[in-house]
Amino acid sequence: MKSEDTEGRFELLFTRTPGYLWAQFFRVLHVHPIAVTLLSIVLGVASAFFFVHTDLKSNIVAISLLVVANWLDCADGQLARMTGKKTLIGRILDGFAGDVWFQFIYTALAIRLTPTWGIWGWLLGAYAGYWCHVHQANLADYYRNQHLYFQLGAQRSELDRSRQLKQRYASLRWRSKDWFEKLYLFFYIRYTIRQENMTPRCQQMLDLLQEHYGQDIPEDIRQMFVNRSRPMMPACQMLTFDLRIGVLYLTALLNCVWAYFLFEGIVLQIVFFRLRRRHERLCEDVIERLKH
Image 1 (cartoon, rainbow, N blue to C red):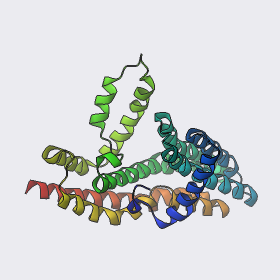
Image 2: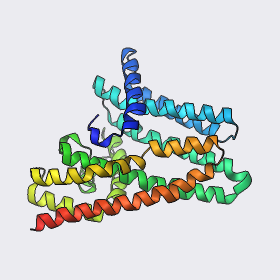
Image 3: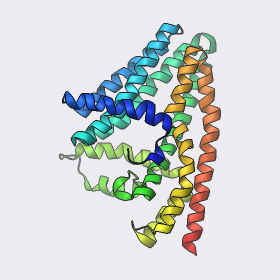
Image 4: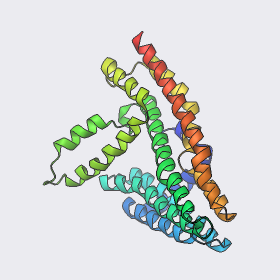
């Protein structure tokens, strides 16, 4: 783990620990982390085909497949760090895995709702999955990386800014061995810009910190930010995987998956807006401190 602050107890016990055991298992077998990632994608996509059905047996199979897929998705990164087999394509596939699962799962749930909800099931699924889920997960990921940036420093965090990414992108050429990294940056820059557009005060704060101190942020500002950011991490965890997937499992077993879409579109959206407002207020306070 990079930090206990960004890992909840549930995630530590039911995701990180099984993932670690799977990583040790694959390490003994000399399995490459990319192979583990690909297996997790296959299992996650396979679960979607069972979520289409309403019977209990199919839903238990779907849940079991997704549980194992999540363990493997956690194991691949740990395995890469254990073995030193870190690659760009591995990082891309690791981030890509969850997106692929949910693309198929939301489609499966919309199909499941079609007999009773018709087109409204698809519209509700599109709003929950392709708007709410995307923005919620992006914001939570950004805030967790920012917490690690202040807590651990730039070298041990993954907080990227589109300005630097664009410079790197411009320095690469399509007709060279760097074409794959350039393709990755093409999409990653857009992902980063979406995060930055949601956090205007945060961007102003980072600009001022860069202007005044570079990467050597004073310890008092660093501690102030970490201490006030730490209580927000449970909300970030709510917007990522564990709570979301728990509600999915429950509503699938009870055959009311429409409630899952409403949960994302209402409950998690409230968490999303409150978290963003609270974090932007923290950034405003840091800005005021820098100005004085």
